[in-house]
Length: 181
Length: 181
Image 1 (cartoon, chains in turn blue, green):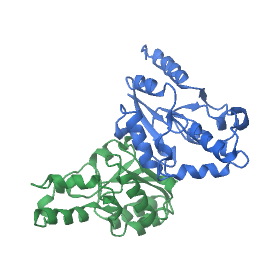
Image 2 (cartoon, one colour):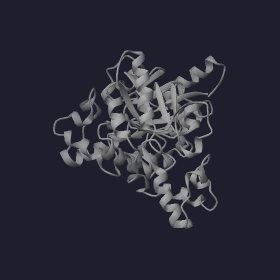
Image 3 (tube, chains in turn cyan, orange):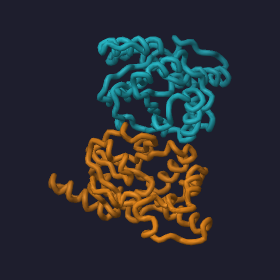
Image 4 (cartoon, chains in turn red, blue):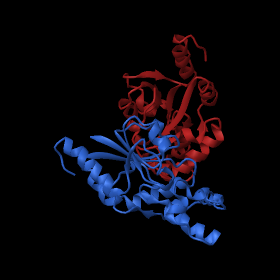
């Protein structure tokens, strides 16, 4: 069975939805997508401190699930080994938050398939779905760039804008082998 | 630079030294190496419950460091990228314990090189040092089996009995390229 290495933040878990709440609370206005298109939210003026919230215990524990991700991941498991590969090490408090979040929202993925790492170049799989260009650059398999504000100008990878596009991509992959998702 | 994937438990961190203390406390006698040679300590009669202690927060936080491991790992870093690859996911409480333990005892290894996983077959590196045959079986690079009671009968891999033997192995590897450790 081929393997898919699946990122968490901004791919399965909606970090920005939560950061936008903190942004509005702290800065008094709610930025629109156009305001941070092409960059990270905390690169906006006065928002640099937002990144500190990522270090707090609990931050990653109650993030919203990206639309349709649960359904599509479960479908993919019929044909692929799905591994969660998350760069959690910069935020040690996120380790247990992320583990528990996965158990709640993706109970059909076994803990054996959870990987918390720092540098994803150590990962060996057939597909990687990630919003960070730096992770995909060092990957030897097929790369899918999951759209996030900071990567919209990149044209080096196959782009997926949402989970229905992820599903469509793998439907096409499976169709080459005469299979259906 | 070639990469070494380095296991923690029973390779860098002495789990058995701590389990033996619990064993004696709970069962009233201290087993010798011969008593559990060829198996795991908690496979001894009446000791099955010891495995439960591994789930407790803190268990992995104060383990002793294996003799000479710090010195040799630091030497290896001059020639190799050293990644810590630990199967922590069975014990979610161990995630933060292991992270903190590494920061205390191996501060010269960057957190980017910490990998907490379940199934090590996702790891891509040139060398793997591990005490579990199942981890080495799925590895495509060069395998070093670090001696532990449960693996003494295995003859499928290059065996290292301690960190001075690990050093000797890499001295020989480097000598092939005209380098010294």
